[in-house]
Amino acid sequence: MKTAATHWIPICKIDDIPILGARRIKKSMGAEVAVFRNAEDEIFAVLDVCPHKGGPLSQGIVFGNSVACPLHNWTIDLGTGCAKAPDEGCVKRFRVQVNGREVCLDSEELSTPDEQH
Ligand code: FES
Image 1 (cartoon, rainbow, N blue to C red):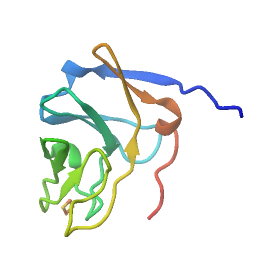
Image 2 (image 1 turned 90 degrees about the vertical axis):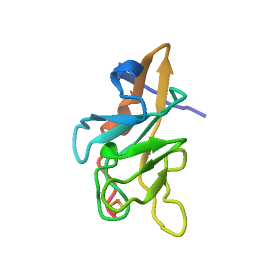
Image 3 (image 1 turned 180 degrees about the vertical axis):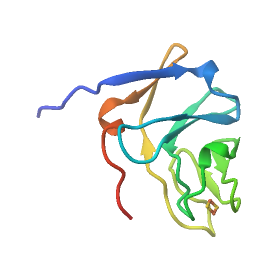
Image 4 (image 1 turned 60 degrees about the vertical axis):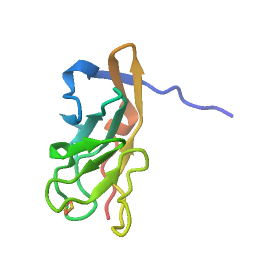
C-alpha cells in the first residue's frame, strides 16, 4: 500500500503560543486554525470556529485538555474536538507535530477547504 509522506510545515515555536491560550494560523482558504497550548505544553489545533454558533475558540481559556468558548461557554475537548455533554457538536481537528520546541501542521490539511455543515 502506498502512503504519501506527510509534509509538516513549521508554523511557530511553542513559546510563541501563550500558555492556556492560542495562536491563530491562516489557512490558504476558509477559517483560521486555532493552535492551543495547555499548562503541560501540549499543543492542539482545531478550526477557530465553535460548533455551537461559530465563536472564536482561539479567544477562549484553556483548562486541562479543553477550551471554554468565549461566547456561550461551551467546553470543547481539544483531544476529540467535541463539545462536552450536554452540548453536542464537534470542530475539525488538525494534526500537530512538535519537533523540539517547533510546532508543525500538516500542509495538506492546511490547504483543504473547510467542510460544509
Ligand atoms: S458559539 Fe461557542 S458556545 Fe456558543
